[in-house]
Image (cartoon, rainbow, N blue to C red):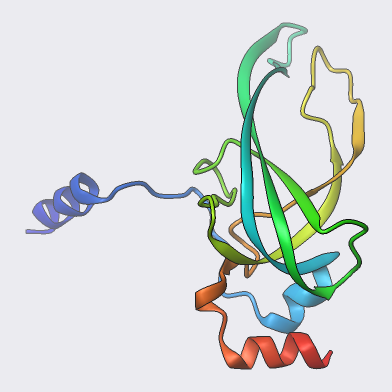
Length: 158
C-alpha cells in the first residue's frame, strides 16, 4: 500500500523543489532582506552561460546553465530604496533548486537581497559580478493576492 501511495504521489506531482527552508517568519525575513517591494512582472529574459566545477584532481567539468532576469514595475516599497520605477532580479533557471518563478503580468511581494555571486565560474577563477538583486523560495516572496493583512501591517509599521 505504501509503495502504491508513493508511486501515485510521484507520478502525479507536477514538479518539486530540492529546498528545505522551514517556516520563516515575517520579522526574520524582513531583517535579512535588503529590498522588500510589491511589483508587477513586466519582462522575463533567459540567458545562457557556462561555468565549471573542479573534479578535485585539476580537471574541470564545463556546464551550460541558464539564468533568468525578471523585471518588475514597482508598486510599493516596504524596505530599502529604488532609484527608478522598475526593479530587476536575476536567478538561476527558474523552477530549479530554490529559485523563484514569476508569471508575466502578475503582482508579487518580493523579499530580495544583493549578491555578487558570479554567473561565470570558469576554471577556478572566483570572479565576482557587479551586485545584483536575487530572491529564492526560502524567502516570503509570494503573489500579491496571497499577502495577508497581518503581513502587510507588519511591513508597513516597521
